[in-house]
Structure formats: structure tokens, C-alpha cells
Amino acid sequence: MASGFLSEEKISEIRDRANIVEVVSDYVSLKKTGRNHKGLCPFHSEKTPSFMVNEEKQIFHCFGCGEGGDVFAFLMKTGHFSFPEAAEELAKRYGIKLPRLEPSPLQKKEMAKREVLFRINQLASDYFHDLLTRKREGEPGRNYLSQRSVSEQIIQEHRLGFAPERWDGLVQHLTEKKVSLELAWELGLILPKKKEGWYDAFRKRIIFPIFDLHQRVVGFGGRALGEGQPKYINSSESSVYHKGEVLYGLQAARRHVSERDGVIIVEGYFDLLTLHQYGLKHSIATLGTALTTQHIRALKRYTKNLITLFDPDPAGVQATLRTLPLFLEEEVAGKAVLLPKGEDPDTFLKKGNLKGFEERLAIAVPLIDYYFDWLMKAHDPKSIDGKVSIAKEGMAMIQRIPEKIRKDFYVRALAERLDLKESVLYEMIRSAPAGRTRPIEGLKKRPPIEDLPKSEEMVVRLMVHHPDLIPAISEEGILNEFESPVLKRLGQELMGMFQRKGTLSLTEALGGMDEGLKEKLCEYVFQESSIEGDQPGVGSQQRERILKDCLEKIRRRKLKKDESDLLRKIKEAERQTGRGGLEALLMERQELAKRKKGPSQGGFRKS
Image (cartoon, rainbow, N blue to C red; front, top):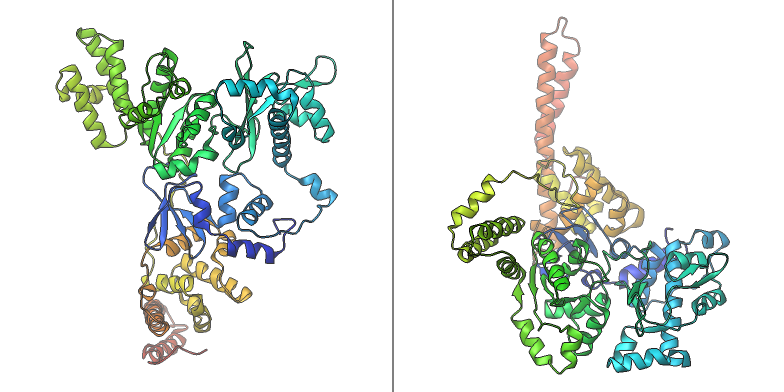
């Protein structure tokens, strides 16, 4: 078994107890549509939701990129979990006790390196937090946070820590815990001395543990006390930490982001902590890097209303402007909040300006308008050269907007600012060199759609939604008469699983199918009101009649095809010298005529 340590029974218990809609909702904002839940796919960029979750069947599928499976597959894909980690995460969430078995030496050797790295980070986080909150050495850190009015609650919620001035505190701690110092070096926690040994990378600093969405520590930030340089340092990139993908505080903010349907994006650790301390918990921070497409896609799972809150200095203005193209291409409602000159969120709020801050949030400026304002200041709108520069740069930005109606509104807005006709700006687009169309990232090449026989589709849909009919379908042997190879294979897969296990688990079926069959199976699971036999109020007897009608249609079509093939063979035999085999073909035609008189009128055909 893939889990290594768990029995089939325990895995089935976890699968039965877990609710895939609850688990997926931690990552994707879902809306109920009939029997299914729909949202934007977390595995590829899309503007129209094609990601579906079916609570009854406990599976998910994206009709854009093809990803799908059960709750284990979802966690393994989104959180880069191994199967045992996904099982343990679900067991913990749903109060399922797992057997604590000691892995064999071989299994220990095969343990993923990632698991070891997470453990080292957790040990370091506990060490720093313990120093700050309990040890005498942590007093400078406590004093500093007190001076900055950081509350005890925030210290605990965000597991803040302190690294003392000594050079080997963490090295000694990790040595005592018998962990690999080479791996600690890979995580950026310690550094090698010139000759021999190791020393701490973080010294005399407030420590900010950085968590992923599964509450695992992936890295650290450190703020120097006093005038130490550099003021901030971050963990180096590693196999568990990618600055362009991780956002500080998202693990604590995501529930609030979904509830408020909006997120505030700031630059610094302390800005984030202050916002949370003042009740603005729908806030996250970047980690010393510009906002990336991956960041925006992560936030889009919870909301499309993104508000930037960067410092009003030139660097902050540039940071705000850099986000605009990303927001436009990802079709999110980017806005900017402007604070008074010389203020940042931390200083502004601590001066008692919470009400004023919330008022500024309410009137946040759309980023495209912010950009137009900046263009009007960067160039002279009264001069011809200035107008040309504003028009060129403005239209280059507008061209990034995928939505035509939104694009038209902003062309009109720019034309009004420049006192130009809209047609002049549109002409700039038409006369510009045609750019290459960028393919949508993450989408798989779709095979041509096959026109499938409706009656065969109905039989397979009945197998999917009403497995209790599978024994009757098996007894009829109807799959052998299917015209569509795809539906025949899919039906055989479902029937084989039912016969082996006495039940039909769609999650297991999906795990063992090739992409083509998996796609078709998911289509039948998620398609709303896809079969007459699945409508409300339809009983088992009516479903049996629907099945019987399908069987008769399939057989009539098969007889018609057999008759056509036979007539062709007879004509060919008649044209041949000696007419070899004609008599046998004529006898076969007589047998076919008997079959054409039709199946019995009541019940299913018995073999």
C-alpha cells in the first residue's frame, strides 16, 4: 500500500470520515451549484471556474487542466504531501487515531527529505520562540516588541521568536536534537565556518517563522535589533521554501480573507502584525520580494478583491505599479490604499487612526486609475510629447486586460484624461506590431470530442450513479455490443471493480484509470441532471425501465449494423465466381431475421 504504514481499513475509515468540500474550501472559494461545488482551479490559471467538487461522491475534477481524484490526491497535489502525510493530516482533522508503528530501517532510509527539513525548521522555530517568551536571553527581544506595542496574543498567534547575540546557540540546540547540520545549512539556519564547524545565521534578531497553508514552518525572517545591518534577512530558498510562492501570514488570514471577500497586501512583517492586532486579519505580506503571479493565484482561491498597501515613498509607488500588469492579466480587482506621506500601516494605526484607515480602505483607488494618475505626473499632459508618452504607455497597459468591456471602459477613461478621441487610441492598438499569443498555462491539449451513442452513455451514467444496476447490466452482457470503444472500456472498468469489491468506489476507480477514461468518468459524475434516471422522485423501477429502453436501442442499432454488414458480404459473394460461402451467409441472414423480431417485452434478457 502506498501509505507504507496504514492498512486498507484505516485508509477507508479516513476517506469515509473526511469531507472533501471542507478540505478543498481551505484552498479554494467554492460556490454550490446544484449537486456540485464550483471554484477557480488551484492547479492552473483560469478566469472562468472549471474546478468541480462532488460531496456525494467525494471527488474533485478540473475540466480545464484535467486534475482530479479524492481528498488524498487533493492534499498531495496542493500541499506537496506524501500519501502518509496526507493521511495523517486528515486523521488529525477528523479525530481518527492512527497506529503508531516504528518504521523499518529501510523505510527510515526512504523517508522523504522534505519531512526531515520540516522537522528541522520546527525545532528551530520552537527554539527561537522559547527564547523570546521564557528565557532570560530573550529579554532584549521582549523589550523591543514591547516598545513596538506588539501584543502577547500576536506573539503567540504568529509564534514570534528571538535569536540571541551568541554565535552557536542554534547549532548547539540542533546538535543536541541529533539532526543533520548539513540540512540545517541547506535551510539557511546555520553557516559553515572557514576552517571547521558551524555558526548561527540569525543573531540578535526578532524571528518571524514563515508558515505554509498546512501550518508547517518553511522558512524564517529576522529583524535586527538596533542598527544592525542588514536590517532584515530571510531564509535561503530551499526545496520547502520559495519566496515567489509563499505569503507571510496567509495561513492565519485565509479564513478572514474569504469572509471579507478581500485581502490587504503589505510589504513588511510588522505592518502585517499590526494590521492583525487591530482586527484587520484579512491581511498578508510579501517576503522581501515583489508580488508574483503565483502569489496572486494563491490569493485568487479566496477572493478576487486585492488591495495593495505599500509605503508612499518612490520605492513603494514602484512596487504598487509593478503589481498592475499581474492583476490585469489574472483578472482580479486590484486596488491601492494611499497613506499620508511618511506613514506606513504600522505607524499610522498606532497613532490611533483605525477609523481613518478603514475609511481609506473603503475608498481604495482602482490600480489602473492609480497608474493613470502616475502617468499624468510622470509626463506633461499639456505638451504633445507628454500626451504621446501617456497614450503609448497607457494603451500598452490597457492591452493587457483580457476582458473587452473592461478594456473599452479604460480606453474611454484615458481618452477623457488626454482630451482625445477614443478612435485615436484604438488606432494605436491596430497599428502596433502583432504580438504572439501566449498559451494559457497549465491546460492540457484536449482530444477531439467524440460523438458518443446516447443510449450507451446512458447505461454508463446509470452504472456511475446507481451501481446497484451493475449486476443486471453484467448479466445482459450489453457492454460487448457497445459501438464506442471509450464507453465500452469505461463500462468494463466500472464493472470489473464492482465485481471484485462488491461495491463501486469512484475515488479508487479514478486512481487506476488512464486520462481519457478519467475525464469521461468525471464528466458523468459532475454533469448536472445528466440522466433521466437520476432526476428527483425517480424510483428504482423507473430506472430499470430506462435501462431496458437503452438495452433495446443498443441491440436494435447493433442488429441494423450487423444486417448492413451482412448484406454487403452477400453482394460481394454474389459477384464472385462460384459464389463461395454464399449459402452460409444466407443462413446467417435467416438467423438475423429471427433476432430482429425483437427482445422479450418484459424484464431483462436472461443469458
